[in-house]
Image (cartoon, rainbow, N blue to C red; front, side, top):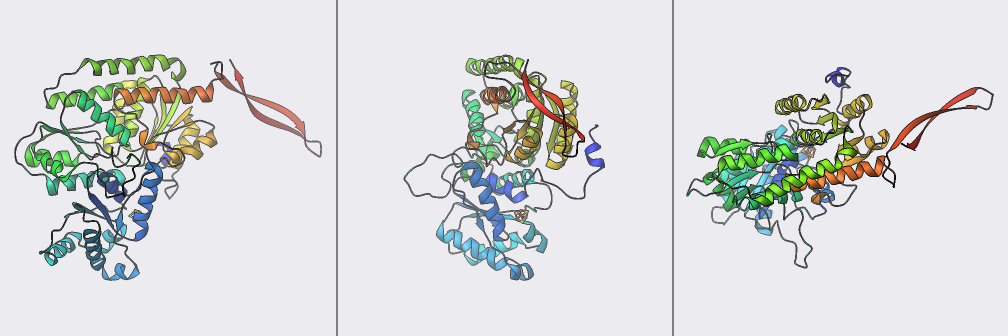
Length: 475
Ligand code: SF4
């Protein structure tokens, strides 16, 4: 099967999409901004859906406001509802900032969010209003990845202000889980690199249980820090798809910008550290070198169990290209890779990785989980890496699902799954190898191979039937 075959007999629908809508990406970015309320300008179901997905993944209370549009507002416009929502949030929660993301509905009816927000400000000149930022996130194009990208760009466009140079590096994380944001922050700390994290979800989405009344996101990047991004030494984006803010800061304020790759695995983490050292004068301490050595050691230890195991990977484009390189570094064979986002950058990344690592996976850019399942049937896979939506495919193919990405709702601890940096890499190598050991090896450590057997039997009228079944045998 070549890389295009999956699209040749394409059905005329997306079946089980491997992406989410733009406002979800906007909310994910805003959950890492201190004292900020995300407001979806759309029907109530949009924010309910987002809160539901985020809560069952992070197991934390999630606040997302809605302008709650109805049939009437679809005809007459959502101005009244947006003004009322801004008033209610200001009076009841009084955040430092409200970020308004549009939805399918308001983009289609063409609501002028900027104009409505200006009108609201004009009508409340005597009041101390929060900062209000509009973000255009039309849900019928692109995906949550672009929603995230647009939101971080909107934050720096509205807030970044040139004042006094600082010695910081802006880090655009992309849609990472709190544990991975913490891994990245640990590397920065080890290098003694001061940073501004855009945006820092490590506290808000993995908070301790306290007896205090829940208040709006107390952790995260502050408005003051976002203002200061214009004065930084440079910007490093951990994703090549979410670097519009870095490009903006470079063009407007001369803040040098470097995009990607996601620091997953040995080579990509080396690349991340190299990018930081290109922007600032950082010394690599022996502790970081030791962590690198430990990752290499973990990969060698695991090699006999995962060498040449076929792996199928799906998720966000930078995640998929990062994991493809990482698993290939480990000696595994990526057989199918799928992202829901159509992306030239992803295709270029994959072309480079496949050449360097001499692998030839089926590459699905803009694919859905149906396409991926067909490709797995054709190319085979010993393990699937991706979010909870891969569970039924893994079950049908009788392979394990290694859960990572978003959303993970059928297991606990999604906010603590770490794959980035050398230390996150060690966790990943251990966990995926143990998953393979659980599935393909017996309790004495011997590999179990599946052998197909055929048996004959007779039906009620005496016809001979051949029954095929599988047994698991040790070698
Ligand atoms: S796709 Fe549109 S309708 Fe559905 S949740 Fe996203 S914004 Fe709302």
